[in-house]
Image 1 (cartoon, rainbow, N blue to C red):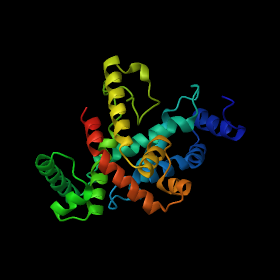
Image 2 (cartoon, helix red, strand yellow):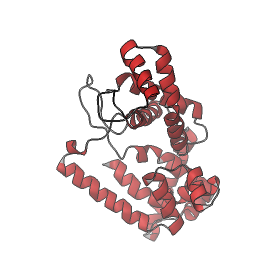
Image 3 (cartoon, helix red, strand yellow):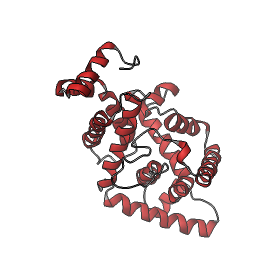
Length: 258
């Protein structure tokens, strides 16, 4: 057993791997449950209020158990690092299989997109949330929330899972530590160009919006943690995030389309 684990952890892993002890498995699950809770909170912040956190947590728990069964203890990799990718991937897969986006939001999204197209054709510029709200009869807050909800899939799909044989263990953001060496030079160049475009888009945001986006997507802090950092309420951080996502929508859509 590797010295990266405490004596107690080493015993639990020995009991699980060698003896297949259910008690050891339960103890390990309990020890790493914080990963499920973390990803549940983080991902649920993107989702409409109708999506149950309990469902998201169930998806994450399946991922944690899957990680426990498939983890190779001989690898020079800590279990929590490996499990974190598995938990996130399991939640994402679960959400993709469920029709979590209500029809009302889909209809509002189409209405907003139609209004945006007409506005841009008429005024030769991108409409603000307030202008879209005036056209659609929604509130600006409703427009921003709808955009945020509908973009969840786009944001999660920026990292695409490579396709392989069905019998092989899948690789990608939700399944294991990504290996940049398998990305083709052309694909890598394209992804770098898109990231540069996104960075340019972020520069158009105001200072607080840039900070929230950076802390949320780069540092992976929750809205509550970001609020503690910049001394704002969680609801205010959520509002700033929604406004920023609305402004970045076209760039994020472009990333999703590739």
